[in-house]
Image (cartoon, rainbow, N blue to C red; front, side, top):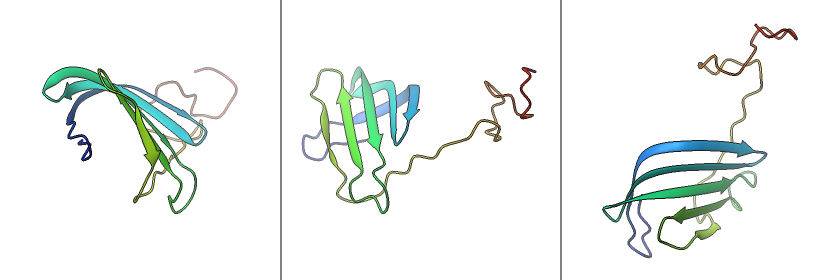
Length: 101
């Protein structure tokens, strides 16, 4: 990832967390920022179709938070409902009864 205005380069090595609440998603991780070890947090907000008001912010270790409305593109927050198959079989009771299996 590169900030074309500042020249900052981020090479993501690991995503350590993901949180989705409503129409926003936040993920964080670590990697290299301008060739030095560092961490980052990204928050995106889906303000509807076709992405005209979607928002993006990024905080990196040792730098300011940068944020704004997308100039192009479209952020989509996809939700999975409890009971739907997500492939991980963790944290869900997929048989839709009220019993913990």
